[in-house]
Length: 326
Image 1 (cartoon, rainbow, N blue to C red):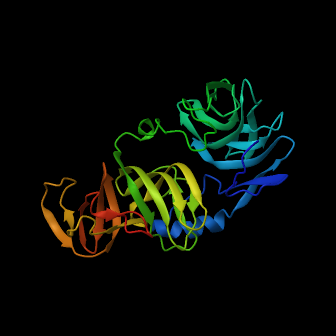
Image 2 (image 1 turned 120 degrees about the horizontal axis):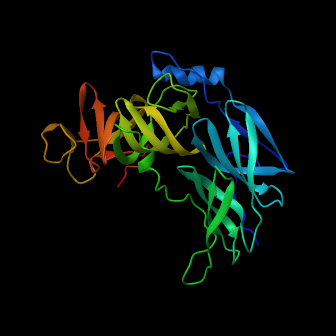
Image 3 (image 1 turned 45 degrees about the horizontal axis):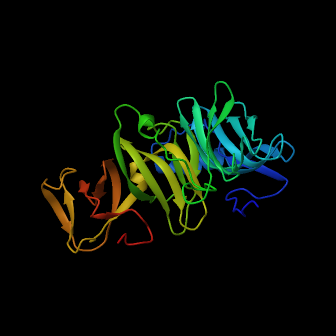
């Protein structure tokens, strides 16, 4: 029997809708923090394509972006009602079903979580289906529109069953643009704009807005992938209380993200001159101190605290707005 699931962001029912802010909204304001409000006025939450139950229904997870094409999945609907893979052209506002899952024993059923794009191939999972009806890993060739089951979970003591998570993004490093500095770590949004924080398609204030991260009363945790100048490449964002969830890559201005310098190891937090524990210490902080992001490298965060700019080691900052990161 299929497990009960919470379909976040979308209501379960005979009709559902894709709710996104269209790519292509020009920025242009001098201050990136103003863009969230402007983008919201120019592009409110709009039903770009109602999904009919006969063909595709119950979209789940988040989009995978490639150029101006969004890829996604529905847990139900399609030719035999077992889920679909679809694409959405953000220039033409046209949604197209690319594949309908057929179910066991030769195919998966009830696809889950976002797709991972590697070149022209999408990778994903289904909750059930496959040879043992316990879930699959699959690939989908976007050029040939061909789906292939790579593995059917068997369950028992030697294999898993019913996968329910995003595939490991081994494409992440290859998706980082040339010249960007690779890094990892969690930070949180500090954008004062009540309309939210813009995630853009390129490290430029005039680049299209992919999605707007809504304000959350407790904050939104963002995971970093790289930095380029004053911009941070993120690969996920999750609201603490709002239920907002984004998986995909996009750029956020560094000034709209922050961490706290904290005393996590029984000593004062040190602001270093370089992302190196052996570098000179600019200043030490005894208690928690709010810091705005300026860059990142590996697991070090470049921050601004008042008029001072320096680097915090992973032991000296907390990137969660509601915990002390023990």
